[in-house]
Image (cartoon, rainbow, N blue to C red; front, side, top):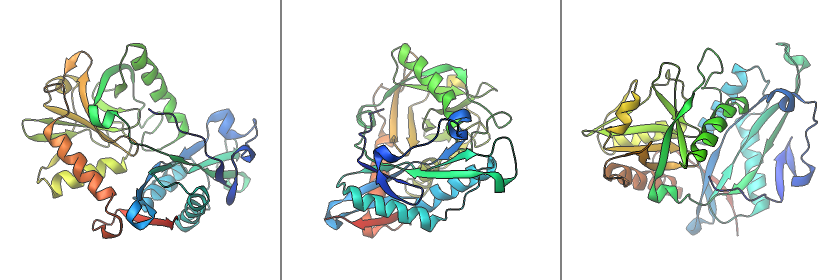
Amino acid sequence: MAELTQPQVIWMDGGVRPWGDAHVHVWSEVVLRAASVFEGLRGYWIPAESRHYFVHVADHFRRLAESAKLIHIPMSLSVNDITHGLTELVSTLGYQEDIYARPTLFLKKGRYTNETSEADTGFFMPVFQSAREKSIEFGLRCIVSSWRRTGDESAPPRVKAAANYYNFRLARLEAEAYGFDEAILLNHAGKVAETGGASIFLVRNGRVATPRLSDSILESITRQSAMELLEGVFSIPVEAREIDRTELYVADEIFLSGTLCEITPVTFVDQTKIGRGIPGKLTRQLQQEYYGACHAGASDRRGWLTPGPIIL
């Protein structure tokens, strides 16, 4: 994953402030126990309109609220509040390129209690310049990790919580140590789950499959978008089911879907070439359709896009 360049300002607790002024105390719950939930959403720059369009804004903020509810972090901000903050920050930064926003709700105090009146929360949202990854064009080499994806009975994957991502960090460190780009995690039943930042799809004999939501995966918004395009544009039904590790090796194509990785081909799993070892035909077609939908601007017909402020 490419490094994100530090911006000059950030939106925190109700307003834009200098990056260096965004402080959290070392004795806050977010530091002590990683008590935070977050989202990641993309804004695509449309030069002809001099503005960004953000993808699935309402869905991302709904999922943020659901994550907060599940781990008992009070959330007083509305979709309109966060959208206003995003607009204010994007206007201040003035980026005229694709961007990535990471709204984060965190707990300052409220240790081991369900009494929300005792809780003190904070909210911050940086926006970064976000160029497209080269792997989207050339594909990724993945390893099936020895680390298992946490399950609903331990650290629920549907909660997009910072604490859950240590599981992914261990898997990615393992992948890099063995010379791979990314790790694929299995769940505790030994079935395919997801990578550290994306959902998995495989294509075999003209059929498409992806793990079920109950297979220890995030309720991915981009996954749903990919399924919508495959079924609506290409008339290919997507089967959500358990997937064995060995099915990955015999797949004709494998691709990932996620906010940052968009639609990314997988060309190798472990030491096994997927298909011909290059991005597959359906993957390429889906990429084009997805990019077209994200760059539709004012002509968006799917209801995916929310316009940002005019930037001149």
